[in-house]
Length: 357
Image (cartoon, rainbow, N blue to C red; front, side, top):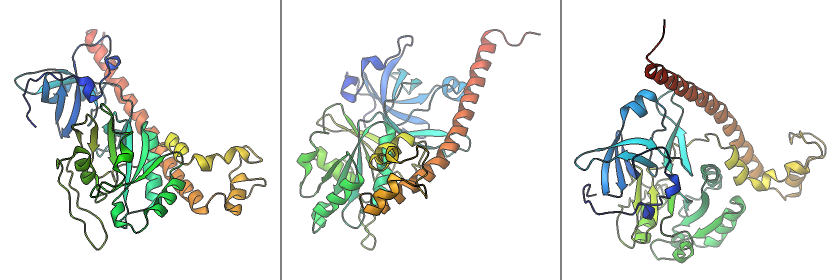
């Protein structure tokens, strides 16, 4: 990527909306297109550039969320070197994980996307439980999930997979495609609009790079070989990056998202399993635990076959995992807030001349 081209760029083409700009702050808006440890690739009105975080804001004060790929930020632009990132703007959607540094809490790994392509391939990778997990994360992110079944050319009958996916993905679009033959690609045109951002969520070997190349109509990403013994692929993406296609659509590709845990997914779980939770209000008792209580609508639906037992068990499993993560998330969130409060207090004391004896 050429870093100093000085060609004027309209950041709106990268999804920026003027209302994102805080009224009381100066700086030039930019979008982060890739993260390399402490250095960031950015696009702003002056073109592509690199940036680093302003230490006094992000490290010393600790008042700002560390930016990630897809974030909109404010920068002090430097035409002859790295620009200075001074603020992370509010996100409309994001994926997060537990920060690998103990005690730091939540860390965003992709931000400001409109759609989540939940991808599974039809060459032995198809797994409904994994799909349910990804859909829960997708709904929680704040974006719209779409199920993409790749490598349809390798399946003898892809329609059975579509039916199974539709049962697991309630209220979600499900599409079978082949990036090799072009089958089903026209079904994606409603999502592929200029200035929209799509994040791919799927395991290695699912065909993310192949789909990017097919959408771009040119090879802009390397594709990995598939191991024949287990149909798993080698990771071909080494860092999270935002790619703008010739048609104006932006893709955030990721080096696998196994790192995403069930971090604070109460909303996402309710959306992904809305069919399951719809029975809760039909139980005789409002505090029904759906175990041995009389008049339990959930158990009645399972007994009649209306609610598949596997679907209920998947819900319970993810609920247990989410409950554990929620407790951990709340603890770390309070710890983060306490650290920020201390930083604000310390900064104010310095501004006022320190402690008075």
